Amino acid sequence: MFTVAALYHFAPLPDAPDRREALLEFCAARGIIGTLILAAEGINGTVAAPERDAIIALIAHLRGWPGFEALEWKESAADAAPFRRLKIRLKREIVTMGQPGVDPTGHVGTHVEPADWNALIAAPDVAVIDTRNGYEVAVGSFDGAVDPGTGSFREFPDWWEANREALAGKRIAMFCTGGIRCEKSTSFLKAQGVEEVFHLKGGVLKYLEEVPAEQSLWRGECFVFDERVSVGHGLAQGSHVLCRACRMPVSPEATRDPAYVEGISCPGCIETRSDEDRARYAERQRQMGG
Image (cartoon, rainbow, N blue to C red; front, side, top):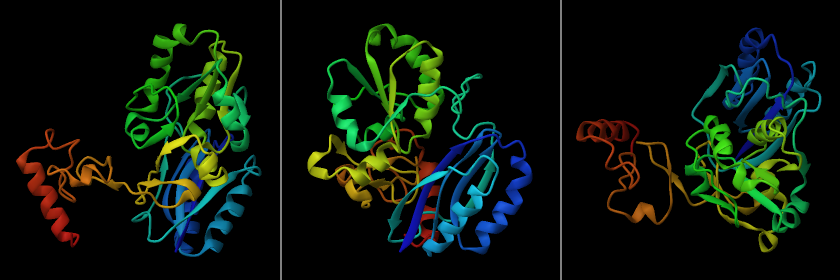
């Protein structure tokens, strides 16, 4: 059994490049796998380890960085290794929005606890916006949530500009997987002059962990960026699998489609890959023992 930790924290990290090597050594020495992103604005990522003590040690280590004392994480479990290896990357942003001036350490939306979320999004004057990508929304979302249909988080500001008039006068409630995208999207909306902006504290993962299934307004599963592919209520592993050709989630129904061949194709990408591509994927699958 692996302990999985999803974490992020916005705080100045001007020496991110200098911290990378030491953090790699720290994680490798404790068998930690997964991906962490470092940038001048903070840290983001999901990691896992066969021993929970390794994750607790990592959290304590990160909280020892100046400004990171309040770093939080969301814990879940996986029956098998949810990642193949450890990666620590340096980037301009820990979640890419591409909007200079957005400051999640300054003005952001009002955090709403999972226990209070249902009442908020049921209000008639509230527009609920899913800030995740379209393929994530297809796996599951909240009842009545607006799907911007974006392919990446970078597209959200343009979507907002095109739709802001239709949402004028509404209170805005936003959510994402773990909360990090909402830290930026709500900051962006506040900078755009939207006064009442809310977001789900801890994201969908915290909601699924804390809100009983019988009280839940979530429909479907929640896509996660690791080998579990999706999780459900109680953060139990979901029923989706990953297409190794296009890296998109595939539902149980779609795996019964003739276009789905494990490791090679799925209904979503069958028309976009050549015979040469599929031959290459088949050889890769053979080498992996599939």
